[in-house]
Image (tube, rainbow, N blue to C red; front, side, top):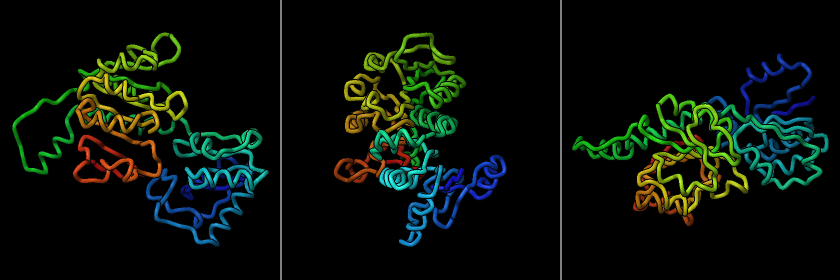
Length: 321
């Protein structure tokens, strides 16, 4: 099998793959791929660009593959569509970054192409790191991180104020797949009471105290201290956290999203942050992968409108807005 590297991978790992699986030939030209900034940096340096000659050579390699390691450009639906159409021998694409399914859908592949090419993902491999980010976000909300930072900047060391404890909190986890189960495991270690979601009735999985149907979220969120989203982007999850759900939350609730941005109605979230219904939001994802536009999200650009109660992560950059 001829496997072409479509996304960066350290050369030592390339050699390990060849050693462990001698039946494949791993084709890579690292000069055609963006430099990695850290391990598992599937997109590489965002400032890096191929020359026209490099782009032609890169596409030649893609069009010679039986299988691809990674989606070209990682989230580039147009590049994926071009490659599948141009390479009739392609049979397998292994997506490496989270959100591969959404990229495949956006590529608009035909039924025949989807029948020919198998798409697989690294589902579960990101569970541990994302679960740690969830704990970080919930702790930041409980310990009033924005207020701590604001007072530190102002050199104000008093008076005292209330901080929550995760051991006293009820946390609703939307999605009990690989990432959700990792989240539950860590929350139980903190002593949280955990409510999970399930579309079919049955006993709660280990570590979950109670199950609710996603259609009943508005009736449940009023008794939780934190909401964690681990759900993928599907028609069923589109804006599941909508205006009605956000209107029913307990004031000061913390919201953490490590699933997909489309699960949350973001304009409604901005309103909930402004009036304090959501006391803190840690967003590892947003609905617009290209970033925030000034027109749609003025609160992410204007110093006068910025929401200090949001922790946003985009493309490996951390910033308090």
